[in-house]
Image (cartoon, rainbow, N blue to C red; front, side, top):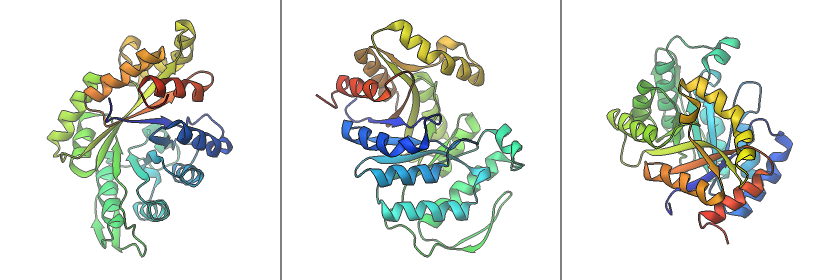
Length: 292
């Protein structure tokens, strides 16, 4: 587990104005990553990343994820380049399909989600590398677009995907893959195989989001996780007892991170449920040997 990065998500339900303080406190605890969310109606991912980066000095900040249908690739590349120039080496840019119902709700559901994601990821990566992009794709059209201020240190662009064809696509076009909450070691092994089938390079990273609740009171932990488990079990189409969590006493939760790392996770990002998330995080980091 020594090589796995440990991150924490700033939950979408937490107030935006509390993000700077939370970011500073997590950095002081020794966490590697802080990930922010972009879900329709909640917070903007790029603006939240900017807030977190500006409040900290060391930690890496991930956007998990920017929905491709909501974002012009040119504008997204411009925004990411600005952050990457001001905070070099500290940004991870996640892009995904977005929730189709939400995309339809605002009138941007694509004809081909796979084509849109491929064309968005490919063009954003090219723009961030300072290339002039000409693209007449199925979903994206760019006519000689080029960044005036591309970043000297290009941030990784990762794809947040779930389904097999999307995982293959991620392996083909992205620097890494983000796996959503609820997926366990067996899922990660399958994801690795699918991204490899798509042509993933050896340095293609795997970031795993995980529901977490750390505490010695089993009933309290179960209560905190229940709504998350119920919702994701329905979405993933699997029994609730097959929704993977990082939960229980700190030592047990640390073992669960180890299981994900052994299955191929490069980064584990904790979505902490229940009271006092920073206290939970501190106990878990200590159990993994990161503190104390």
